[in-house]
Image (cartoon, rainbow, N blue to C red; front, side, top):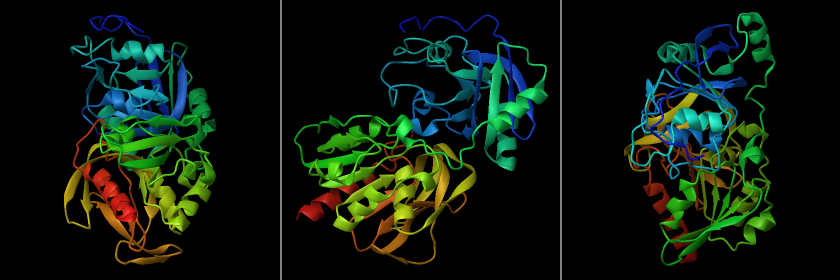
Length: 381
């Protein structure tokens, strides 16, 4: 779509209503495509980076509420998407930009949502909605527009019939269906096999900047297919859904071989399960680009980018024995003490629950890619 970014928002959008599964509703105006959509209502605290948020595959089947009131100011460009399409199932904003203004903009956010069929709502009190989700927890939701909206009881019944996030196996729905290669920038130093569970485009780019040739494999790749790339290291990406549904054959196979392993977000949860820890659903999750995390190996506090509704249940106060040696919690969220990272003490393996590629977001955690490089250097030596 190549329409002008100077176009203004629609003069008068249709009425719309957002209905939560606990019965609370918010009325506003349609934003983006008109129609209906269902998903899990979650909120993101980022004040910028809405284009990267929309195209993050980890948001698949979620309706994202933006806590920042003004969204769409810089329009949409063709450089910042993190994947091939928008993945959120719905979008909620308070005050969308009337006219986007940025030299890179190619169209407005409203136009992009319409073009990709993403149903949204604007003009509602997103502060009140966010407070409600913090108190009651993430829950199923529906957005409805372009039709008679008087019978909210009927709409509520449809919301309650929609699938929950707990038990959802979604990685294969967002992952690549064929292997592709992101070449190293400059001299090639290492080869990494990256399992695509919902990977963001900036992640292999961050590795390529460090001389890594990245082979991005489908979520259902076998252990033989992983090792057919002759990897110096293996990477487990972020992704959507419930980690309890994922198969651990490849993760355990990599651990048994002792290949350097780095996982983020969903990959952190899979590593935790492979080590024998459980996972659980957070009340409302961590989403945004301003989450404080402490690296317990250095004591450093980082501002980090998050998008996760599940977490690993591992002890913070001791080293744990696992089938693959000793493990400890390496990172912890300073807001609520949620486990934000794991590492093995006897093998070259570590993971974090957040996004060190940080697009959009702070770059405090970029050193984790250098830590991965160091593990591969040590293994080669």
